[in-house]
Image: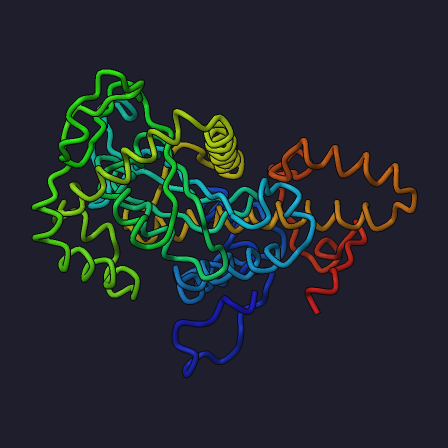
Length: 392
C-alpha cells in the first residue's frame, strides 16, 4: 500500500486510509465502479473514495504495487516448483477483447468481437510460476505483436529467457528484435506448414531435393547490411527505454529481413523438438487461464470497459491484475505454511506433488460477490498466515 502515493505530496495534508484504497482497487479492478462500490461497502464514503481514486491511483503507482507483490513472490521458494528448468524462465503473453461503450480514442471497430461496437485488447504477461508481471491496453484493431517487446522491457523483476505468444503476437520483426535484445522468442504459429522458410544464397544450397524440410526463398542480405547500423541504433533505443517498441513498429518494418533468418531457425527447432512444443503449449495454457481469471475478477462488468481514456483503462486493468496477484500470493503463502507444518516427509512429498499438478491461479476460495466490509475486524487475518523470512 505504500506504493500508493499522492500525486502532489507537497500539498497533501494526510494520507488516505488504507481501507479506502482497498475499496478503490476493488471498485476499479472488479469493474463495479466507484459510486456503486461506495454504496455496497461498509464504512466507505463516496467522496473520500472518489478523492482517493483521483489523487492516489496513477498508473505508475498501481504498476509499482503489482511489482511489489511480484517481487515478493519471486523471492519465495514454492513458486519455483512450476519451473521446468531452474536456469531459464519461460514467459508468455496473450490478449483478450473488451467492448468499450463510451467514446474512446483508444477503441476501434471489430465486427468479429463487438458487432457494431468498438473495443480494446487487454494484453496480459505471465511467467511459468503464474506471476502476472505486466499488462497493456490498446486498440482492438492493432496486432498484439507490436506490444510484445513493450512487456518484455517493462519489468525489472521478471527476467524472461524465452517468451511465447500465439499467432497474433508473432511477426518477423519481433523475431529480429527479441534476438538482438537477448530473448528467445517461441510463438505458437497457426498453419505452420504454410510458413515460408528462408536460406542464405549459397551454391552449396542450390540442390535441396534430398532435404526433409526445404526453403522456398533467399534471405535479402543486401537489405540487412545496408540498414544494419540503423537496426542496432533502434534496438539500443529500445534497450535504453527511450521509446517503446510499439511506437517504432508502427512506423517501420526494417527488421523483417533479419527476422526471417531467426524465424526460419526457430521453425526448424520447433519441428524437431517435442519438448519445446510442449513447453510453449503449457505456457500459453497458463495465460489462457489468466484471461479466465480476469473475467472472474471483473464481477461488475466482465466483458466491458466503462472508461474511455487509455490511461484510465490501463489503471482499471492494473487494479484487476493487482487483485489477481494478491490472490495468487495468498495461495502461495497458505500452501507454504501447510508444507512447513508437515513433519512426515512422505506426506510432504504427496502435498508437493498435488501442488505441482495444479495451478495456484485459483479463485474458488475467494468470495468476490456480496457486500464489502472494510471494518478493522474484517480486515484481520483469520487464516493465521505468517510471512516467510524473506519479507523481513
